[in-house]
Length: 377
Image (cartoon, rainbow, N blue to C red):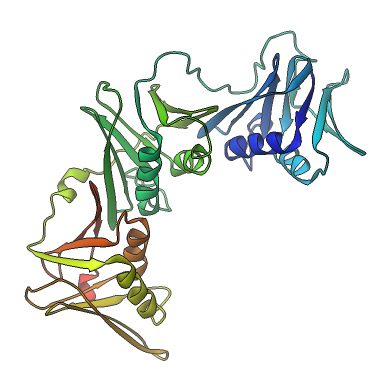
């Protein structure tokens, strides 16, 4: 294997597959990058068993085709710090990879390579599935990325032994894709149309799979994302980027019942004003148990907080509300997370009373439900 590649293009390609490199691999292969040099392109692959990524980089001068599995973190750091415009990479007869960039030269020991095996591909590296067949469904790329941004923040940071709340649900049904994230105390749900109909499909994926697509998918060519349901994996393709996520086996909570919450009181508010007042009040909350109190009365919302030994904050702003007085309490971070993801400046809040969840309508088919801290009201 021998090829000459533009350094910045190679660096960008490595960044796209970097999230699939296992930081603490139980098997050295999971910490590597499989690079395959073909006629005039490179195929880069990573796999940490939770997710795998494949990326195609074109316009590469390949002198000798071949492949090698190279330690991933070291390769990424070296390419990032080189200063030359181009890099030449050569697989030696001793199964090492030489990187030459101007006057700089580095050598990495391969984890596996075409120089040590007669096979076309590594038999030890966990290669991702192929996306040669027609996709199960396609949808607008920007719609999909919007959905990721609208649900990612609501997932749990810890694993639940009963429910797979550390994952994001993707549910395709009757030409509609629904994405849901919840940690048991809040729930974000958004739906968008798909470009092609497919049989009903449902899968829960780790957020980092969708994080990777969200981070790099916008820069990829094309207006659509293709999606494959592959048994215990779900595959995605945008342009030259292919990502695959392991399907979580745990049950996902029944979100449909939560979405049916419709409070009899409706509040219309300005997103930015609400955010600023919440932020002001949150400065005087206890970090270990953040609480803000909301008081609704006569087109006004008062947001207050108090912490012993530190002080009290109170902020008022105008809302569209004419119902009875309501006093309730919430975690301010939960509300601010939803407001950051809102699709418009005008938002609606549906609320029954202090003891029931608040339903935030943050855009078309974008709902966010937050449980109150009712014991503190």
